[in-house]
Figure 1 (cartoon, rainbow, N blue to C red):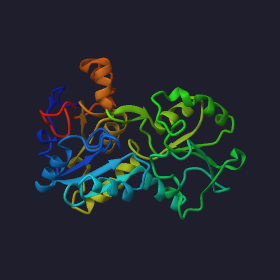
Figure 2: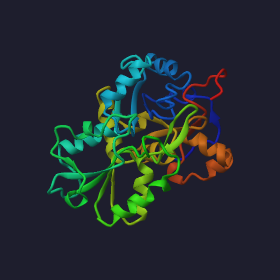
Figure 3: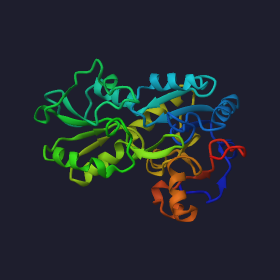
Length: 309
C-alpha cells in the first residue's frame, strides 16, 4: 500500500466509511498527554463512529496496563462500549510475555536490571512483573536483561535523548540484551504538548552502540496480532477491513502496513505535527520512507474550527 493522495482530509469521518474496524493510537491522536487530556472533539467522533456500527479499538505503546488506561479514560468521560470496544497497551502485551516466559533469550537468573527508575507521574513497572518469575536487581552482574522504564531525570521528562548516553555507555559494557516495551521514541506531554523522550529513543541509542534490543509494541507484529484477535470477537477477520489511525509514521503506519491494514496519519496533532512545524508540510511528507507512508492523511481525528490545535 502507498498513500492514495497527498490530500489532507479534515478528519476520520472523511475516510472511515470503507472500514468495519478503526484502530486508534492514543497519544497525539485523541489524547494530548496527561496534563492536556483529550484533544478537542475526540470523544464526540469516537462516540459517533461507534453509533455508526464501527468497531473501535485502541492500540497504545503505553507501558501502563490496559486497566489503568481504561480507568484514566473513564475519568475523562470516555467509556468502553460507548466510545471504544477494546484497549490494548504495550505494557499488557509485555506482561503476557513475562507471565508465559516467552522471551527470545535465556533468563537463568530470572532477574532484570531496571533503567530509568520509577517515574513519579506513572504507575510503577512492577505491575507488569507482578506474579511473574522475574525480579529486579541493582547488580548488573546478576541480571539476565535490561528493562527500560519511562526515561526521566529527577522526575522530569526530557526532550534530548543524548542526556542519557553516558549512563548507557556504562551499561553497554555488560553486554546485556534489552527489553523495550514502548518503541515510541517520543511522546507528547505537557501543556501545551511537547515531544519528550520515551523508551524507543533509548533503545535506538543502545542498538547503535551495538547492543541487542527486543521490542514489544507497535510497529512489531505481536501488537497487531493481539489487536486482530480482539477484532475477531466482532466478526472482523481480515486486516484489510481495519483502518489504523496514528501520529507516528515509524510505529503506527509502518506496523499497519506490514500487517496488511490501511492507515491514516494525523498531521495537526502529535509527532507528525511537530515534524511539519519544523520542516514544513511538503518536506515532512517527502522525508517519509516508503514503508512509513500512509494511505490517507487527515488533519485531526475530529476537525474543529473553534480549536487552535
